[in-house]
Image (cartoon, rainbow, N blue to C red; front, side):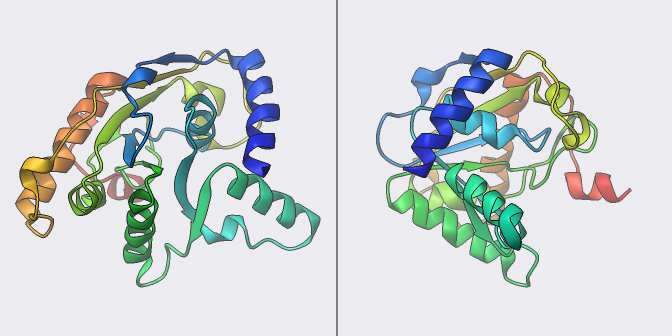
Length: 222
C-alpha cells in the first residue's frame, strides 16, 4: 500500500515537473523475473526508474538509509522501502554476497530487480566497467536482462547532492538479453566477464556515454 501511495503522489509531481520521456517500455516482460541493468549517474536514478516502470522494481541499498533515529529516520525508512529499496549491509565483509543472494531471492520470486553494474555512481558522467554480479544473477536464475539508460538525471541533481533542478529526463530501455547459452557456467570467470561486457556495451549504446575500461571506484579514489 505504501508503494502505491508513494508512486501515486510523487509520480504525479515528477510527471508534472519533469515530464520524463520513456522509450522502449514494451521491452520489459509483463510477467516473470527480469533484471533491469543500467548506468548510474546520480542519486535519484532509482526513483525515476521506479516511477516509470509499471511493475514494482526492487533495489539493493545501504542499510544506513533505514536505520536513522527519530521522525526523520522513520520518514527516510518509509520512503526508501516504499520506493523498492531492500537494505543490505554492503560495507561488511560479506556485503557483496548478501546483495547477490538478495537479488537472487527477488528474481526467484518472479519480480523485477534493478541493478547498476558499475557498482557506484559515475564520478564524472562517463560509463565505467561493470562488475560481474549482474552476470552471476542472470546465469543463476535464468532471468533475462533488459539494459536501460538514464539520460538527463545528472542535470536534475548534479553531483548527486543538493536540491533537484528542473531538467528533461529520458529513460531508455533496450532489447532483452538472453544468456541461456551459458547455462551452468556461472562460476566461469571468463563467461562472467563476457556477459557483463555485453550488458555494458548495450548500456553504452543506449546512453551515448563514453566508456572507460576501469572500475568507477578506482576512478573515484584516484
